[in-house]
Image (cartoon, rainbow, N blue to C red; front, side, top):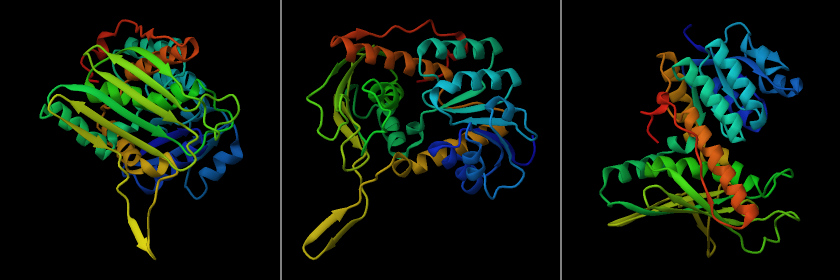
Length: 341
């Protein structure tokens, strides 16, 4: 491995372009060695100004570009399985954005492929684990000062949804973050899900069920509720409150600058996840680079990616059926037995 870790970035859209910027300008110890995107013009634009970067239309071809020692997957979810399996075949460490693989069957194939290697190669991009507020809440819950957690109340709001967003995607694309965060914060598995919905907001596109209230049960006896509202119209808000036997703790209160002038006060509200979680993404990628350069793989595993997809699928079935749906997970391979949630 050279002085700088050579990274192939797969996907040059909103997320991929931001990771290219991050690897070039923020993260130490790494460089962008290749960029792949079906839209090569977009890939060239994202890589503009970088030295010795190979641009490819085909993601797998980029893995074989000179100087590539690791892979950051930021392409759309359906393309992740092929890229992950190709990286495994080449022994390349991977940071893969969520969803790891949108469908649980494909996600399980990834788990099985990595398990056959007998070692971890992939970290999955559940970046909330790297957010300072989430980390403080995790430390507090693990420390036991508040007693056993009984409930998590979660809020997840976006300004607006993309034109292609479906009612199911509120769960399998957006609530997937809360799925992983709840498993990690509580150290418990989610075992059942129920989805309720009020009348849809007038801001929601026709036919989109938005907002939704998603209720999870856990194997530790806790409850997790998630308000998902992707067309709030006013800002990007992510909040979480843990209610425990001896107290509660709340994060995500938007403690930004308050400006008072001429009898008015206003406070900025983030409009984008790349703003709200900018530092978390920076920490996540830096942690991945540091671990990779030491020959280690840390952070959320492909098992976490699979569990998130399987639980989200149960959530979509609950949305469609209007009833409570039990979560069924495959047996957990021994490779991930000691990987903490």
